[in-house]
Image (cartoon, rainbow, N blue to C red; front, side):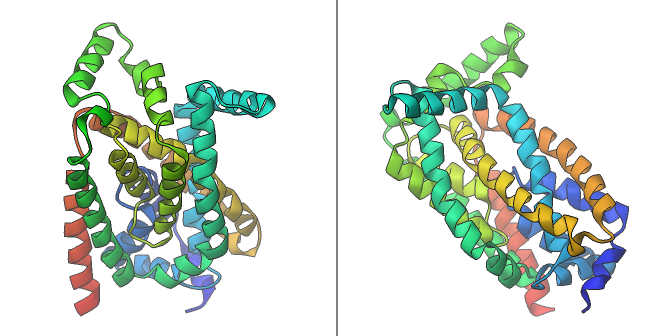
Length: 325
């Protein structure tokens, strides 16, 4: 199929894909998998987009990955105060050549976690996306994503209580107090000293392993946030801090992935779809913001289980749909 077919992407399709990207990039259910599966389920001209995604030079793939910039901007803005603290802490620690405060340790943990997934992404990103960005493969890996989330939740029960951080009851009580004092919105986007200390205790080796595991998101259907959250849970974080840790780890990766596609979108692959990229990016910003606020509230008292069930059901249904028919 000629690559030129992608130039017929409508603004409506661009906005819909932007909405899908904004939600599923932050939900632990894989944005790349859904940008393959949902158009494939709709069929017609939407199916043409999926066919384009598995080509070596794919404007649609550049479009989808380029939308990552929107999500990264939302995450940076949402946790802007924490990122300022982390950058200052990292620079201060580098200048002194020693780590003292929790924010300094957390800054280096993020650096360590980003290195392996960054290297793997640079080396294998394009090949993996071209090879596995197909409905059957995306459906199979989405099912695997559900298994990962289920196993993570089950294994978390074996983590010693002393290492598991604040309980759901404690978290709920703290949230109720925050709401009563009128600072609930501030609490959503703030990582307090206790949370920062808990995150900084993950450890360098564990951070590197969790960071490397994010490379599984190169397989359409595996969620970067989901894998990172499971890693955090298995290291004793509660769900709220596991989400924060996943967002902090994924922000540099998502930002880099989007920036790497900018030259493609400014080059020949972007011909005919640049305004669609703008429309899709606006939609992604709005839905990403809604998603991060929703998830910050959700994981105060809830778990990954509903997302695991969804991944398994939608994944298996898609395997049957595209593998048998």
